[in-house]
Figure (tube, rainbow, N blue to C red):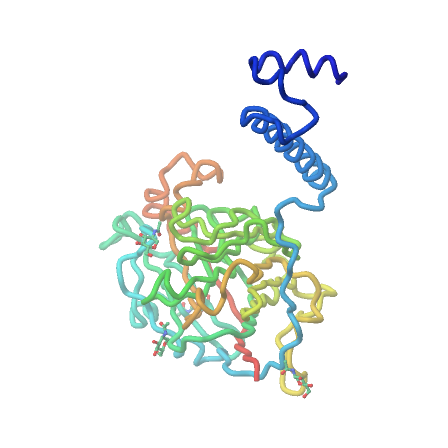
Length: 377
Ligand SMILES: *[C@@H]1O[C@H](CO)[C@@H](O)[C@H](O)[C@H]1NC(C)=O
Ligand SMILES: *[C@@H]1O[C@H](CO)[C@@H](O)[C@H](O)[C@H]1NC(C)=O
Ligand SMILES: *[C@@H]1O[C@H](CO)[C@@H](O)[C@H](O)[C@H]1NC(C)=O
Ligand SMILES: *[C@@H]1O[C@H](CO)[C@@H](O)[C@H](O)[C@H]1NC(C)=O
């Protein structure tokens, strides 16, 4: 800008300005100061904006918290085993109305015995739904089919939980799960879903955490092979969806069962929660549970897990406590019915299907080898 232009423009600010020397700030009016100040602010904003913009496109500042917990090796010792003919003695049988609004009656050990819904040998433990009661029977299953929900009597703190899973339940109307929770203090003491699926279970294993407010996987660095879904674990977000990770189809259902299932491992510790599914007979790290003399399992050598819920933005000690191991097979219920049609299960309603088709539940059973709970010394 030339000197004469500056003079010309200064005319606009009135007669007084003409007496002032434009290059001498001591002679400036408040109005000129304001304009100069505004121009400086605009330049600063433009420069900062450009720098941030360039960084964002380079991926240097994408809002992800780059810190990641150190899942260092822990020295685990065996704390508990569920196996053999006493497998079910370590569980209570849930008897209340289903909180998930399924079309079921959760029965006690006596009924479970009569209907052969829980059955254990030295080698396996089987959990089934009733496949005998049909429309002509008295009573029939019009108010719900018999099934079980087992909750371990022992409640656990952090540890490594190994499950030998030989068969996962599947089929239209089923909603099975293998999970951890404190049934009397939900969601305050948290919930960890290790295996879960609904209906035909062809979309892979669903893993999730459910908590009170303040636990999230949003904008957090994670190392996992599964596909993350919702990031917020808070039970009140999206009707208790939880923070989720889904595995490939081979991690649950018919495809998982075909190979004889596998070993499912949950590591819950201050640094985070991780899940691995190791198919039986694969070359993966763990294809059977450790026996005497095998030494302690060491997840730090197992490679990238299927699911990873790091503690970066979730205080694990605060959100997870006193967890029981829970095994159940629900039928219908809000989750199953919400995806009933998209799962290819219509035209009957879920409830009618459960009432009228006992033979449909032949594949609706869990078969387990043993469970082991390892805790850090
Ligand atoms: C595990 O045991 C080894 C050998 O005794 C020891 O050096 C290491 O500090 C232990 N690790 C932890 C986390 O306690
Ligand atoms: C109970 O179920 C198991 C496993 O499916 C089966 O092997 C056994 O024969 C059944 N027992 C009776 C009495 O039906
Ligand atoms: C979430 O938990 C709170 C208790 O903290 C409970 O009142 C609420 O009903 C729960 N919401 C859902 C959708 O589960
Ligand atoms: C966990 O369980 C123990 C033993 O039953 C109990 O004393 C404690 O209050 C529980 N803690 C929480 C946070 O629920």
